[in-house]
Length: 257
Image (cartoon, rainbow, N blue to C red; front, side):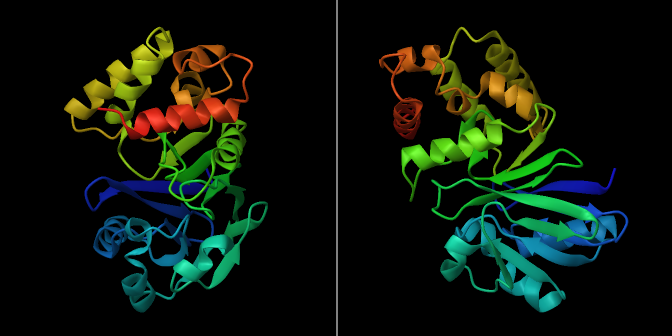
């Protein structure tokens, strides 16, 4: 395996990630939610931070940047469309670009909606995708800046990744997301099994991440907006544009319990 991934909690429910390229010994943080937590994880592993890959401009994903830039000789890469809102970027990238960490390449996937410029980082060689707040396990981010059509297209781009791809998202929201997913897709056998497993894992204090893209494609209602069952659950015609179904699902989740 070309890279190692260290997963840890930041703040209240943010996930922090360190990605370590074994050959070059370079290490990237995916986002910078909490400098203290990231430094503790680096010390635990004995790694030195060389890069930071930012997904979007929200405070809980960039707040640690000033301290990390002060304490380490790092290159900070982030989304071009969010660049004016992120202090400290050294390199800006757009969907379709490639970012490297030593010998490891990350393809930049556009996932607008949560913010207009949000991006995901996909490492095809190792089968990892870092989706931040675009795609959660059994859910997706709130549509703060974008529109349903482009956000649905971004989710479809993630859904098109191989089923074996491991999804590393920005927050531990899975148990709450499972409750909503079951409310709109109660007869989905795979979802029922996943929801029960999530309940067991959280009760045991375990992380629900990473999760395979195959599992998400089978269980996440926001990746299934083009399925007749989800259109029916929203009271919509099965032939309607899937982005309309997606918008209805997102609105329903916004007002859920």
